Image (cartoon, rainbow, N blue to C red; front, side, top):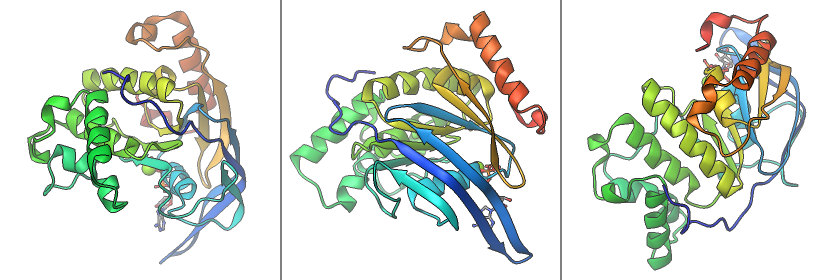
Length: 269
Ligand SMILES: Nc1ncnc2c1ncn2[C@@H]1O[C@H](COP(=O)(O)OP(=O)(O)OP(=O)(O)O)[C@@H](O)[C@H]1O
Ligand SMILES: [Mg+2]
């Protein structure tokens, strides 16, 4: 992966959540999902969110992206409230949601097409993004010809296309096998360092969180609330061999302890 051609035009923006609460109205009544979430994320920080299934992690990402509303509190990205369709937020999901009628380059270039920014500049940006995620050889491939890891690389390149200040990733690696996953963990962590994006990663894997993040926020459930805020002081750039260090194990244990009151069998320990 090379980053030489993909210098950031926008550095990360800070994210600020102040006492954010969210309730869904469902057929069976009112469901409180998040309770008074307060979180200050400085520009460029890489945060992992870990917590039990259903505690509101995806909802929190959608609130930050401006895709769902909230009743109480305040959300700011830089000095702005979230709003739908912001181009300075990259969103990556568990399933990569690629368009089967477009080839790899077409999928990565989709944000430019939607923004009606086609032409030489857009296509050279698509090319350098594909290079960055190691897929420059695959630009004309169909989406159904790609492995799971390749699909997530395309989704990553697409999320980075408009050079967002904020990257939101909702379990982006969970469908990959262990080996591919660790490989992408390292690559994406290094890329995030170099691009300076503010990043929030939702994961059920404690080791993925420790390997990638500067800071791990643990959530409890019913409704979702912050239970732990753990600093990951491993040096950067991160490397796969850090997993076997004593410090890595110590931090993993801190995360485990912070989640101890929750259903720990859900996590990949
Ligand atoms: N659009 C919706 N309408 C009603 N309820 C919803 C909606 N989206 C999510 N919920 C409910 O809100 C709660 C939190 O859901 P959310 O998807 O945010 O959890 P999560 O922490 O991401 O879970 P997982 O780890 O399984 O992905 C769940 O009880 C879910 O059923
Ligand atoms: Mg979720």
